[in-house]
Length: 634
Image: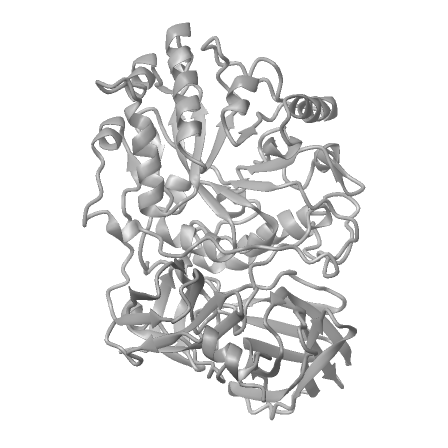
């Protein structure tokens, strides 16, 4: 007899009531450290609010769910807006709608918290940005910046940073590691642009080597200081800056390069026994500079990646032009200009026409060269298309809290492809939402069958009967005959369909279908939307959920041997996991919105964890497979 080991998981929208019942007036928290602040920093209750609790999610790339075949799988994208100390310095919920935001995590691998001044050399990433990045599998690195003398930098400042203790150890090494570990970010961007003497340069080299030996976190060196102490931007990896590259995890080159320089960087990295993708060729996209100017100069990216072959990785710099360069967007000063803000960001990744499925003649967008990556790997899959801010906050289609808000920690899983054109107009809407602050609005002028790619996924396990759920809103007499989720899997080239029949009541409708049945050991690789319309229409999509009953095909004997007891459940906070099997197990705990809340190894037969109030899904992996259940914390 086969024993069902997985219980049906009710999909419940997790509403952050505690967040919305407090004052959300904008509180700008100082995440910048002077040299004295840095030296004297220590963990305390006053700075604990900036700790990210979201682990770095696992990411993957599905080769059969890409727009273009043969895209390079090894090149990485480092995203570096200029002045993140100005654009993201908040650690909790803000009452301001028009703050800097980001939505294309699927195309980047790392976010650099670039910025700083002569008097503020150390910048810390903010919790909401780290939360959002981590749930998408993207690393975030803080910044250490020593300014040029022309901007007030001095050798004395850098020398003070490079002080050693009585045992001859660099105090900055331990401090940088402790800061990153305490706040749960992933490393440092090291930008030394101060001209110094050879003795100070030798200390800088020794410091970097010690830091690299002391940690496995990301250390990205900027192409500025040479081993002599002279600042001389090489614009490529070569013998003059290779020491710093060899003692870091990567190098971010300056921007004054040509195609030959990129080839030189590639060749030199290989000669050192390193991957050329540890070199991030810098692209300064600021529109008023003549380096790799946004949307007007498009040849530079094909000097790096052409015909699916990449010579190096890429660092996209000054991408905040989407926010504070008025010819593209004035969203920084005008909350009503959000459409231009998001359109400018889409152009970076989807091309000038904002459609990754078409090929622009000139700037084609990052999506033409880099494959989509995703962290959507476990059921339940749930999204409300919440961008992490809004003009109001909604729950179940009604306004829960009126007024503007912003908190990137609450950003939902967002579409992998933004957005498919083909006679459709698709965009985010803040005028209405089912949950959170935004929804997806889809409109067309004509009748037809419209298929819209939404999500690349790797949803496992899928030996289950899947329940599909959507929330939609359309006006009475809207000529849509049916809406379907098309669910693609590894076992078939044709999608399974969950078809919904909306009533077009003019109100939000929550629709559910229980009819998707993947084959055993199958994996869901993509979720698309299909609309059958007999005329022009306007539709709001506010929620997509895939959930189900999972059965593990092991015998009762095997089930008894591998079972995990969880108690008490419900609980007031403490949960104990107990098993007679003493082998190490992996524990994952998710919120009902699908976000990973905790991940750790269970080394002992009985271990206790503490969780805040809420409803969670736990999964325990042992040699026998996955076991799963629901936790209720009162």
